[in-house]
Amino acid sequence: MASGGDDLVKYITEKVVVYIENPRAVHARRKAEKQPWAEKWFGTLPLAWSVWRSKWSRGGESKE
Image (cartoon, rainbow, N blue to C red):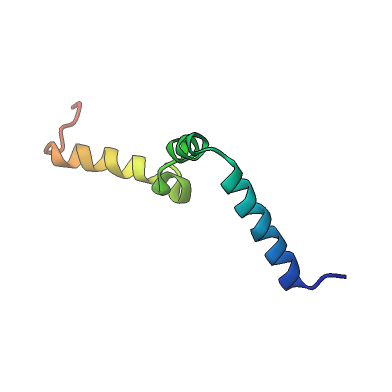
């Protein structure tokens, strides 16, 4: 039975080998496909905040 440290080293080694074997184009494509960190961690909250802020910065125009 392997200890937790051995499993961790094996996992990290496998990830490094896969990364090294992939061409640079794959790395660039994967990096381009990533979501912005704000959307990933906070969902639609940044979108709602930006809409609210844009309405506030225009002077509070309303449809009334």
